[in-house]
Amino acid sequence: MFNGFISAVEKVNDAVNGIVWGWPVIILILGTGILLTVRTKFLQITHFKESLNTTIIPTLKSLGKKKEQDTRAKSVSQFEAFSTAISGTVGTGNIIGVVSAILTGGPGAIFWMWVSAFFGMVTNYSENVLGLYFRKKDKEGNLSGGAFYYIAYGMKQKWLGYIAAAFCMLAAVGMSGVQTNKISGTLAEAYSRAVSGGNTGIVKLIVGIIVAVVTAVVIIGGIKRIGKVASMLVPFMSLLFIIMSLIAICIHFKKIPGAFGLVFSKAFSFNAVGGGILGYGFSQVIRKGMARGVFSNEAGLGSSVIAHSASETREPVKQGLWGVFEVFFDTFIICTLTAVMFLTSFDLNTLSSEMEDSVMSMTMFSNTFGSFGTAVFSIILPLFAFTTVIAWSYYGEKAVEFCFGRLKPESRKKVVVGFKVIYVALIAVSSLIKSDLIWAIDDTFNGLMALPNLICLIALSGLVVKITANYFDRKKGKEVEPMLSAYPEINDEFKEDILTQNEEMK
Image (cartoon, rainbow, N blue to C red; front, side):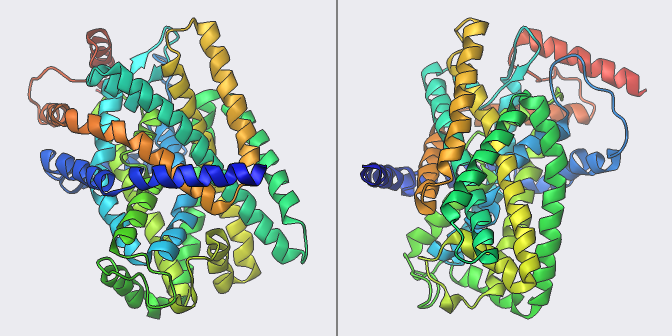
């Protein structure tokens, strides 16, 4: 009976996925990024240096220095907001997702992942700008925002905002399912290699339960605890992966030119890779690259903006610049390192799209580093996946709060707790679902979540340009009224906050 249910789910999902990730949506994703890039005068290039100088560089310089906590609102620091957002984006998609894209779409899929990321840098920037501009503050001082907020209050289409929030809840469950599935699959594979003939099914279930319990402990503390956990884990796991992948690439440095050659030569090919990988044709190469690109960096989903909206910063553009760096780091650094490491580690003619992506990802490490590589991979991937699980729990929670915002606070809290219970329970269940099915389901949920967000980004692209121009005009010394919030009372409050901060700095 269970197998019959799973089979029915596969058929329905395949039909919906074919529509959601068809050419119209692919064109919409690229078109939105291109439109925003042109309207902001290629901001990801012209202001990339400023993005670094106002985000990651000062943050790195301030590490270890004691900073006074902002008490004016129940917010988190810019870096904690970024860490939560990047933990939601840097997950299994950066390793296993890239491997999956190559196996099923060929090396050319990486090119389209880069294309989506280049324009996605401005898409993510625009999401953050709008998210902070239309975010709201409740009576307790909590700041909340997201795609559903600027759809409802910016585009003034509340019904579409509710749909976007509902899709966000589904995507949250799907995303956590993928991450847990890959954690359990990876550790089960490591167990089977260490203990021949071991019961991997039991291992997967135990791992799923452990992940569920630890997730429950973290998400009880809300965005502040999530932000603190993410800000500790993200730098460590990212640095560990970068070091290991660079070592592996250097060991196979002679194959680097060939790897990049395959990426570019197969990007416009009607076959994936020779006779080894099962080629799906040109459209599949683009679809896999775009789908995995969006899965990885989330530009266009309207998800990471939920975390950014909780930032203490009063300037939408400042947090928007974090979004530029976020996509750059996620795709052009982490995903590219994975792709080059994979393409230089294997003879592609021996590969097949039928191969298990998580197994091949582990083999990529073990081929170069032996049992040490297996051990390191068994640490890196669970950390990548776990931080994504806790970040998406917050996204789903905020979507629930938005949908049930008219309820009394006590009733709304009960609904949120109910969502968290379901979220945690499904984490354990997802550890036993087939890998390819869990990927396909979440691809569908991601596509559905992206649709209303992309439509709104196009509709409000002019506002993004105005807010951006307003910020840079003020930086040049022009006397213009700051555009900090869509709501006059919050805009006035934030203006006072900025004036106070400027006075304290003198």
